[in-house]
Length: 575
Image (cartoon, rainbow, N blue to C red):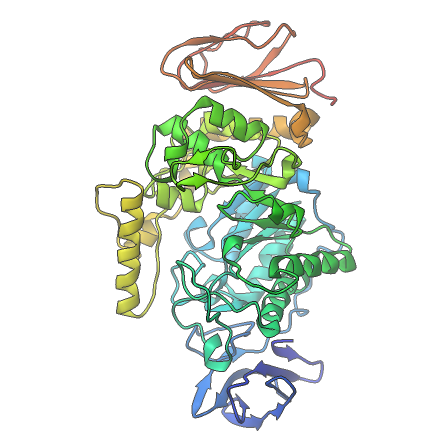
């Protein structure tokens, strides 16, 4: 165990790995309690539960495995009792992976209040939308009150400005009451650049590897591995989360067997079985590496290629990694097989063959999206995709786990920028320089909003009133109807890649996706009206992105520019 554990007698067990220290004490309420050394550089003691600091070598620091930082990253740690919340979700056992429809949100900008508790009144709207799981961007304690969460300083402590540990428990419990699973984004690939005090206690950082975001953990040390594995198990056991999204797994460096991802996955799944729940691991990586699934034990791999293929066609973007995309064939391959860059051809962006083939993975073993936090803020300089209905239809017809980004369902107009509230000017300047390079990488010629300006953060907050206004209410209705159709049509929700058939015309820029004979989508991505053959089956028009689409049965369908139509057949209720 790392950190402090509340005991029934009002005391707490304190434990810290600090091989650099000759002597260690824990100060609780201003009183020092000498800790006993253990084998391997650990110190432990039993003392009263409360706010505490570790005192050693003339320094007094919070606990790097603190469960609560009520006064932020530079204040004392606080002992918490995860069993204190009267949970109401004992009947909740989780969802099957193929049932997941993800809704990614950032706690600080999802509501005006920016807290865990403020999410709860919005859960009914998300359930009625048709999503089945919310995915929280990282919530570990970070410096200040404004951050994406990837600059985590205290990975065990839910952010104090969001509502701390009790707030996170309440929102998870409420999600389960609404039939929604909870996925938590976690950051194990690097140390936060500010106020992360792990290195003050022990050699947690790798001396051999580096990442673009900061120093990685040294996973060749068993103590660093245990720190991460215990963290993953804590979210599962103490906070009842249903899944973790592992950020940038390609930057989890080690040379030890088993690889840290495999060790974490095995422990996570074993704990879920012990708890009698279904729980999953999603992995984010740009390496297109099926070994993450086949060898490391992760359940679903984020598929950037679907986004890139779709975005390049809808926007005409060819900068950065979009240089490898832009053909209808790319989108068709992303839907039928998964990875477009699968090692079979040279990548213009990578300068070599890139990726592995995912054609034999099951549909839910990939997660697809038309928008997410990274792609909006980086590739699109904060601008959201405007062609949301066509994109939503194409996404819903993939056999993969679909993911929506907050506000996408009604065409939110607020941007989503990168924002921080770091306290050191040199670091803030370094972030500004990094953002400038990121924008240049994607061909941006204009200036970018200052990540440290509070106004940048405030501009990203959702405007919930748009949901009731034209045309946003129509966009919202389309998403609801689409997800409802997906849920009640087995051919759309069964994840069967082998029953997914894609046809397209490169020159005319149309595409059809047929799922198991139960439903077919026709989409026109051109600027001209086109006729699209959909076969001889007596399809019935179920829904469309506009009013100018004929409801007549039978082929072909005639679609205006930038539109899509969904047809169902006689086997729509069976697969």
